[in-house]
Length: 445
Image (cartoon, rainbow, N blue to C red; front, side, top):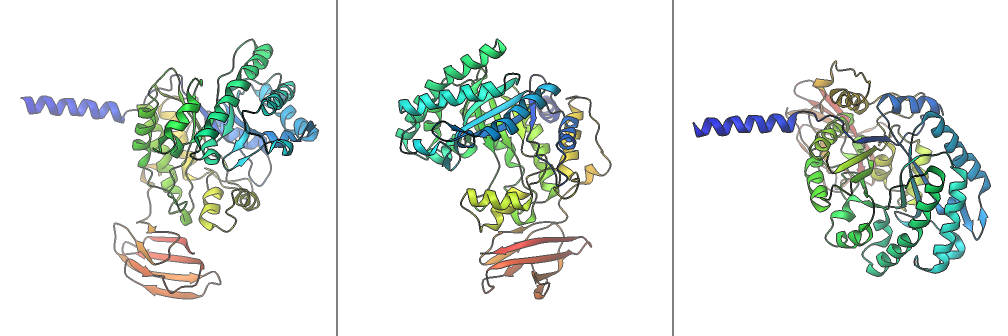
């Protein structure tokens, strides 16, 4: 009888964990971006169709003020005034990210470069920046204001730098609250943004907590990456959410995943199927931690163009890192060329939203239940030595080509020795015993 009782409890527990939780007070946000057609209204339509309730707006300090008192009027008018009109017209609130730090750089006016963040002149000038900013967005309702993006990427493990930045935030946030309250009669939620690794890494997590102490929310970017910019398995979402919520259990200060994404490029050991699985897992994990995670912003709706990817790779100091560039390029759940096309992940997201009655949404379920990785994966990629092929069915044959289309190697086993190959990009075509095929790009550093 005890065994039957325990089995019944297990079934009830499993049902509770696997069923969808209603939306409640959770907020879904989208980093929109346009496809090649340049039609922002169309892109917004896809985001709104997928229950968008808030939209991020990123602005660096230097993009507004390059040097002392020299404000970029064209940027202020073309970006901020337009945002003020556009988002206010559609009633869409904004998560404003104003960045004096952006991951790897200080984005501050040139004449302030020698000053620490807690210097009185740095603080005085940022308050003037806030005045200039709010003058351009008087009608814009803010979901949140985050001052700094992925600041742990720049601050590293330097405790003094964290203390200085904490003093900076403590000094400028009251001014931001006052200016916003004067416009809207309400306070704005304020904080700063860290990377997931920074919040959990033993070397930095307590430094991050120094900064997060007293903030209104915990802002974090989340991309399950390996050090070589290949993607981790989509299943890591569950353990990652457990670790994050255990580190920040206070429901009075909710967690905001201000960027949440997964690349689909085979160069990153991924695919559209794995990207779709990631987002399915995001919703399931979010259900379990709905009391702590208030907002998730999907990054991103549409892939970047190759030109933007090259620019960003240069900004981050990785202009020749092919896996990094493919990671950036394929983060969208819609493709870039032409009008853009929905990837499998976009339809998966619609179905997850529909299952939770998030908003009035329909999804194409036909065939989605059979969506899966063709037969396996190849790893590691980039690869210096042996490339391994995994899969449920035996490998019938594989062919390796160079970028000129010339056959360089062929075989039938699960291991491919590339140690003698010259650095470059190669194309792999795998045929499995059940007739399915898998193709992808291989990087030899």
